[in-house]
Length: 326
Image (cartoon, rainbow, N blue to C red; front, side, top):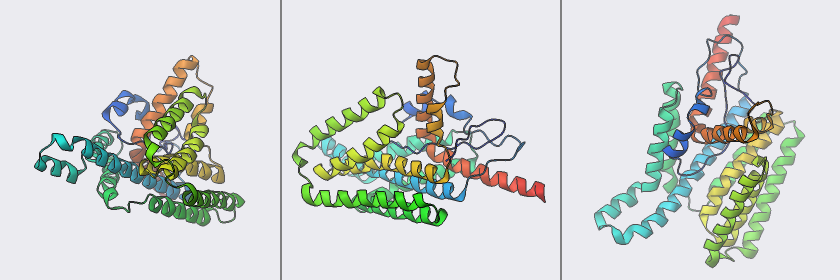
């Protein structure tokens, strides 16, 4: 989506596309103030709103679906590992209850939804965002165990939306073909080397996580770098080890790339990219960087309600402008 700050001229602010598992009160309560203006209601409709385009709306909802679904699929994998560890410590009844409720996933859904419900967005937006979270929680265990189902169905929807909304743009076909070639290459890599390092999965995980953290902390502008690296390296890790956790984690970075493509195709500047390029702050570089990190983490936590609120605000703004014109 384009860059939209919550100022006196616009009530619409949209989040970058990134979602991480196990959203907790720690991450959301640490940076609450930086998101308050983003969730503020329309300011008396004093000026025309910059409405969301249909393409932006459709594709961002697709990104939300992909990220939240993969988030809770990852939590389902972690739940299985967690229950294996704690099984000797629990009696049969407690174990059966925790296993049936998917404890880690349930705790995440409740805590995340509780935080979203405390935002200043309209009640309908808060309830809908919480419904999205719980739908993912209850639906994830029933999805096919192969991550390819989520990946390929999301790619088909992404491509269909690009073709529907930007059918004459050459970039639509270029990026569509590029991602298709990437999936085709990964498919053949799995045939040649699938599961080659299955026994060394823990070592691969340690190396991958170390590389991701180093890239995130050492780079001055890590957004593009970590999106490309995460999407590619985590997918390769999944192919080489067969561990589904890697695939579900890669989808968050893949969705970031897809949203970046949408920004390029529609010629709208992404909020996070604009934030990283903003040099207008008079604060020290360290203070400015900490504010950017706080802003991004807040958007990570509040992503569902921000998206719903953005659409709600755009619809409300359109209705207001239509009434004024009438």
